[in-house]
Image (cartoon, rainbow, N blue to C red; front, side, top):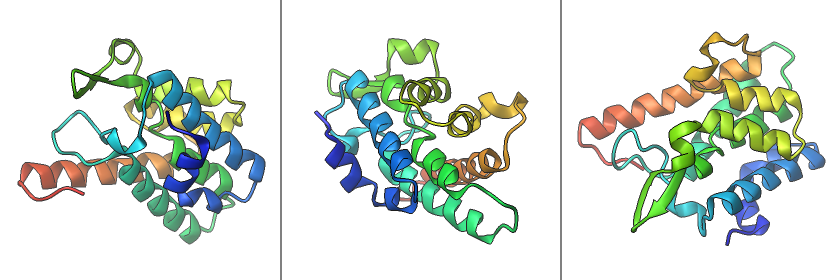
Amino acid sequence: MIEKRDIEACFTELTWILDKGLRSKVVNVWKTAADHGKWNRLQEIPFTLVFENSGLLIDHTKRITELVRNVGNTRQENLNKDFLIAGALLHDVGKLLEYERKDGKILKSAYGEKIRHPAAGARLAEECGLPKEVIHIIAAHSHEGDTMNRTPEAIIIHHCDFIDFEIKKRLQQKGEPVK
């Protein structure tokens, strides 16, 4: 079973969220997702099932969070940096419900066949009392958000997520090692 301290140790980027209450809620969403998905270790969850050898979800999440922070720090707009980091850390948390371990393999779960990770993650975030702005970021980060009026924070996370996805996919197609 994954404990809150495991999540905090895994995501040192949590310290970039200045609001301690929000930081605690982000950890709680990860814990709730891990419990519902019956995961024992965050280090066993792949980034994506779209292509093989995609690397780990936690590594993808850390890359996105750093990219998002860098983009946010270069923008002149008045962005909510706490929401930006919280959204980056949680954008794919719904994958803990979309995927499952079965017979030693990670597969799409029955739940995941019906509900993709943006909707699952947004629902978890709402259950855990996160602000509607962070719930929006999670819900809008993937293709499901293409018809939404994304906030500036959601736009940043959407594009950073696809930068990482496309690079990983291309490297894997070329047979290069994926981290």
